Image (cartoon, rainbow, N blue to C red):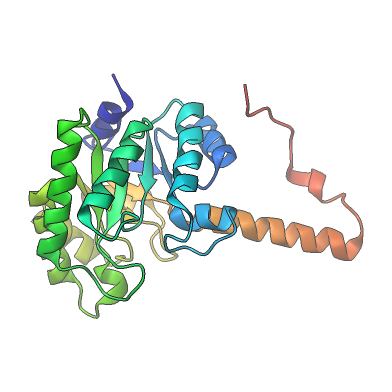
Length: 264
């Protein structure tokens, strides 16, 4: 069974696919060793690790290079956050998605918001883009490649629920395998989206939404950590670095650390 099929099947189980998000090779290896069944990337965390802000400022070739290392190093499916597709037109985005699939990744997240301007792409246009992506993937032997259509309405609209459902239906019709709605946290809204769209729903960890079991009970199929783990890691390093700088004593570094071989 290839990784694409395995990743598809993880969305069909009764239990939520609890998906951590890696930002470099080491974090991907650690997450796999922890026991997670699949790994996503975080564009925010990867950008930070490479010295950039989020928003497609990382070069696409650099993104591919990092993803290739992760895919080669872990034995679980890897899905890739490609933001809005790193392209100005659908042909360029399609080509980029095919490059990601060619690395052995199991899927992508692709969002309907713009990177260089504010706002959302017209939902029918974005549905057409997804249809083109799906068609080309199928033609090239990647029929099981998972397209997770990210909908950014909860970041940009005051009353997003109705528009979210309309977009989710449009994107599902266009060939999306799953729907990703980051920013949503009201359980009533989440339940309404689950009932209204016949595709696995993915939501993201937020300070007021952290319990996987509660989401599982209302039909969510995928729960992403997003950039929260990478942010917490950076914060930990900052606190430890400040402490040893101010005390001129490295003793605290040995209280929680342990040596572990992560590379074979």
